[in-house]
Amino acid sequence: MNIVSYGGGINSTAMLIECVKREIPIDLILFADTGGERPDIYKYIRHFNKWLIKNKMPEITRVQRTNINGTYITLEGYCFAKKQLPSLAYGFKSCSQKHKIQPQDKFLNNYKPAKEEWKAGRKITKFVGYDADEPQRAKDYTDNKYIVEYPLIEWDMGRDECIDTIRDFGLDIPGKSACYFCPSSKKHEIKKLQQDYPELAARAIDMEKNADLTKIKGLGRSFSWGEFLSGEEVQECSIEIDCGCYDG
Image (cartoon, rainbow, N blue to C red):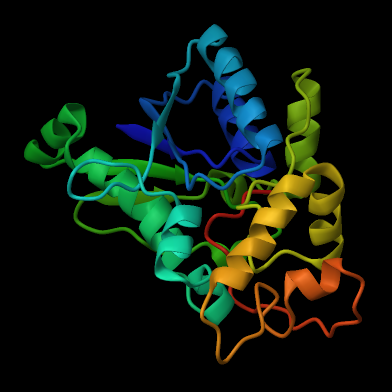
């Protein structure tokens, strides 16, 4: 059984197109929705979903983090409720673990075809769209349930090759998929967010204001987005930790 972890960005889009091209069977496509993608990414996912169905691929299954009552918990809502920022701002990666990885695992643990595979003693192969330009992101997560593979790296497809594949099939190039308030955002991305989606930039600033901060200044770690977008000179502190949500 082959499943794809789809992020809505360039990498995983190109990976799925290549699976169609190479006639690689896919049984399930999961999109773990943090609730924080930009509107253009959600729109692209809906459009690409139609393309997948047309090309005899499974439609995209959306999963989200839920509480014990089954209520959806967005990352944004969680941060506001806890008066904190995404964990990446503090140097940790639990935001992607809790809102990306765990919802997929929870869904599969209750997915009948997956349970039948495990009962029969077979592992599920999970395809993840890290490209050949970022091999450091590819870790060996194979365990007693899953075999994790990185086809784009195996096919030696970097970002440029992924873009070429998408264009070759007549599809638009998706934007960068990541939470709009992601602490790993670069300054030019923060400015573009304010330009394209001022209401989202305002919500990110509200998240900063709502958070109880002591060791960091804001979503930029060494600076707050609010200060930066108001025109103040700030010193950028790059985040060394890869964001697990980022896709192309």
